Length: 416
Ligand code: HEM
Image (cartoon, rainbow, N blue to C red):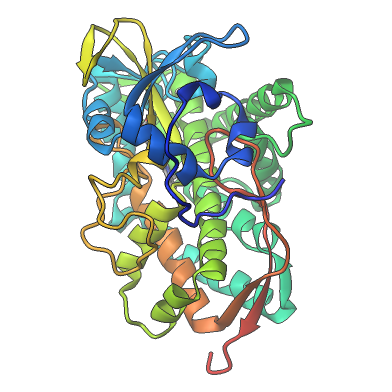
């Protein structure tokens, strides 16, 4: 299982939506994402993914503007019946109406406002400092080792500590959480069954409920304590709201940041010119971060259910139907990005959809960016060259665009 290259391929002449089963993680192993999406965008910007293997059909949006419009619209669309294919296809999400990402309406706003307080740059300052120190230490150790699997040596080990710091998770429990989490949305390999994901999800929820009970007795400064002790209109959050929202931080904060970290290193191993631009400080860390976010697109899709009939281009989505929004296509839409297949760290403007858009815009975007900037800064100072030692393997997923393994040689920067 090798990662499809991110290099632009020659444009395909035709596109057959039926050729790709977007519910099957294998599709994303077998196809170059650009070769797959480019002709679909050109010939079938909106299409109906027919029901297969007992799974319902769904709409597929490939164009940036259509996807942004759907993200913005939580009146005609709902997230309460799932927001990723695995739950959308079931038609329900057990956390609906409790967990931010799958809650709409006034309750979404109330819980989001509450949680946003814990995510302001001021409150996050100590967490950010820890991220920078940890990233720099892990990169330094990886450089000293020389040849490493960047996923296990570095990418796996950063975001969970951030979430751990945010939620006050004891250091000794963090590794186990990373492992469960990796199994929830993307399985390690095609051999693991759906039940592996389900069991991992239950383990995480059980773990958090234990921690929550403890925080109620002994509240601290962490987000979990805030959730466990906060009130909205004088009423505390329900236990389920607390547990699910804490869970969503582990889920949202861990996997996508890990995916981006390995994506950065992979991209630089392929694009020496951009690596040199970073090294020579020809681009700002901020613009480099945005381009890495676009280029790696860590979460390939999200989705909604239509609440009413919604016309999109030549089609009408009927009330009750599933609509999927493919970030991995939108971020390379020729109508939204100049020269989209060029990895250009200096790209401006760069309005990628990697953090979503509208009312459900990623709550952790600031933190996600901090991870990326820290990673770029440490790589730039401590590493002189990045060399791929073996074809990387992808996470087996139709959601997370990350690596299961990424063997690289990092050459030290002697001036560091
Ligand atoms: C929502 C991506 C990091 C927590 C989202 C959404 C996207 C996204 C696309 C929108 C989902 C939708 O519209 O249905 C990413 C990426 C990240 C990242 C690419 C890293 C590179 C984080 C971090 C945290 C986090 C670090 C928390 C510590 C959340 C939460 C939501 C969310 C709680 C739900 C917000 C709401 O529904 O109001 N994320 N995320 N994410 N993200 Fe992130």
